[in-house]
Length: 88
Image (cartoon, rainbow, N blue to C red; front, side, top):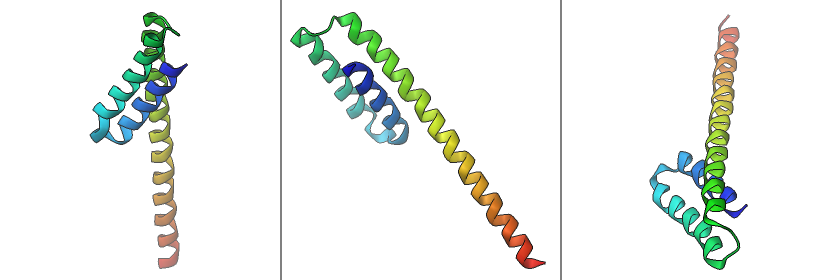
């Protein structure tokens, strides 16, 4: 679960803060690697956990951006429609 969580968070935040892409990915990789080093997980656990986590983070970021876009567009339309009624 460490790999899933860390890669999900890393991919989600690198979509928001692309300047920190390498920091986020290296941190996620090192945390995942530490689980193998300690002997708690097999490398395949870390690999597939990283893939699943990155997928979850990416899909969640798409959902957040689409939701934000929807509400911003809705807010702009509401502001424009209120402006038109005041002009009449």
